[in-house]
Image (cartoon, rainbow, N blue to C red):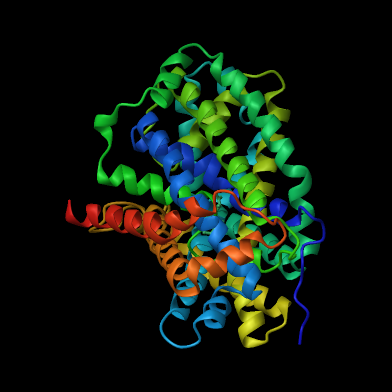
Length: 454
Ligand code: TRP
C-alpha cells in the first residue's frame, strides 16, 4: 500500500487549509458579490451563514476526512459502501474540475496585473490627468478581451498549479502557506488605511456597515450562503481531502475555528478596501466580476511607491490563488491516486489538462467572444454562469448532502468521537450536533427552494 502523505508540522493543516480557503474568494468574489447584493445586508447574512452553516460543515468535512483517510469518493464508500452516497463524492470531484477551470482564469488576471503593476501602468492613471477610474476600466476591458493573452495566462496558472500539486501535499502546499498569510494581511491593512482616507470614503463605509434589510431577497440569501461555503472551500470535499492528511493528535475544533476566523477576517478587510475606494471614485459597487480589478489600480495610483506596493500585492494575491488552485486540483488528484492507483504526477497532469479544456470558454467569456460574453437565455457571461452553477448551487447542495451524511448516516456520535480525538473536549458539541443534523439540512434546503419558488 502507498503511504499517504501527512502534514509535517502540527499546524500544517491550519496552514494548508487556510491556504485553500484564503484566495480570490475573499478578495475578488466577496467584495463584488456583496456589492451586487446590497452591501451591509449581505454582510450580516454572510456572517450568520459562516457561523451557523459553514463552520459546522467545515468541522464535519475535516472529521470525515481524518476518520477515513480518504478522498471524497473513498470517504463516502468507506462509511456507506453500498447505495448512492458515493455519488456525492463524484459530484465533488467533478465540481473540483469545474471550479478550478474558471477560477484559474481569474488567477491568471492576478498574474497579468502583477506585470501591469511592474510596468508602471498604474502610475500613468493619475499622470494622464484623466479620470483614473475610467482609465482603469478601459485598461481592464481591453485586457480581458484579448483572447490570446487570456488563454496564455490561464495555461501558465494551471501549469504552476500542476507543478506544485505533483510534488505532493507537504512538500508543495504546506511551505507556501506559511509566510504568505501574515504578509497578505499586512498589505491589506495598509491598503485599507489608504482607502478609508480617500475623499468620499464615508459613503462606502455606510454602504458596507449600515444594513438596509429591505434589500434582502431569496437571491441575496442564496448568494451569501454560497459565498460562505465557497470561501471556506466547502461542499465538494476539499476539506475531506485535506482532513485526510491530518494527524490524529491534532485538535480539529480549534484548527477549524482558526481557519474560519482567518478567512473571514481577510474577506471583511477586503470589503473595507474596495467599498470606500469605489464610492470615493463614484463607481458602481454592483458592477460585477470586474469590480476589484477596476478599483485596485486606482488605489495604487494614489499611494506613494504605488508601483512597488501594487506589484507586491498582485504577486501575493497570485500566490494566495495558487495555494487555492492547488487545493482544488488536489480533489480529483487524490481520487485518481486512491481509487485508480495512478501515480501523483500523472494524476496532476491529466486532471490539470482537463481543467485547461474547460477553462477556455471561461477565458474567452470576458469580451473576446460575443456569444460567451453574453450567453443566450441566461443573459450573463459564461464565467459568471459557471460560477453560479458550480461555485454556488452545486456547492450548497454538496454541503447539504455532507451535513445529512455526517449527521445521520455516519451519525453525529461517531463524528464526535473523531472530533474529540486529539483535543479531548469539545464544549459546543451539542450545538454542533444541532447544526449538522437539523439546522444545516433544513436551512440550506429552504433557502434553495425559496429561490425556485419565488
Ligand atoms: N475557498 C477558495 C477561495 O475563497 C476557493 C476554493 C478552494 C473552493 N477550494 C474550494 C471553493 C472548494 C469551493 C470548493 O478562494
